[in-house]
Length: 119
Image 1 (cartoon, rainbow, N blue to C red):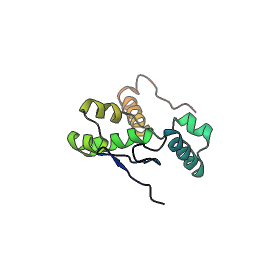
Image 2: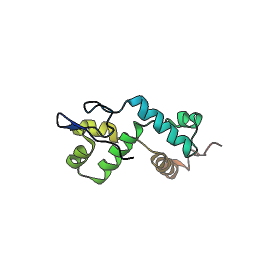
Image 3: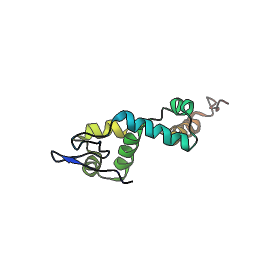
Image 4: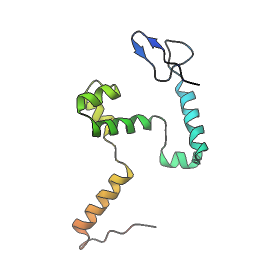
């Protein structure tokens, strides 16, 4: 089934609800997102520990668009009206960022301060 996209007052909803002037409920989106995580083996305990929420996908999208596009294009893609708001959504660290920072710190200061990974 293809989701409907309604247009109300010139605005479209990515996840349209039953009524043309309303988006799909955030509760429904969240429940369906969590159900799909369960399908791929991520249970509620793991989901909560990792902080996985549907809204996080918006941040990930903003970060990736900000890395690949000029600011003006990224703002259009994400719907942000200012570069500051785009930066707010796009400026998040990922595991690879922490890994690269740890490696750089180890290279810079490893001879005077041991960097070990805790088990």
